[in-house]
Length: 140
Image (cartoon, rainbow, N blue to C red; front, side, top):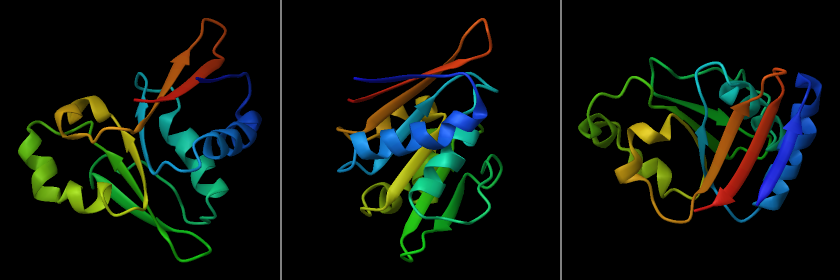
């Protein structure tokens, strides 16, 4: 299991590098954490590690953002916070993205858990009393 404690936002880039390296064969990452835990901020660092210089923002209203890497590969960033029914994910065509072989970074995956494939990387971000974060990751 991957576990890192982050005490400063400046540490996120190196933790993102370690995460991507530790799960180099994986493409679907599900990010769990309370509102404000830092999911989007961590995903910004991951996108930089993957070679994207695009402006990475939460796709809360659009549900999905696409970023390009310096190798012209796509990274798909989902935010399912506002999903009320699984049919919305079907309407979005989530399968086309999830099974594309491209990186898929999913915020609020608990909203579509029945649709998630096997063998994804579950990333949990837990806020500690001292405001540091503990980031854990494991293939599930």
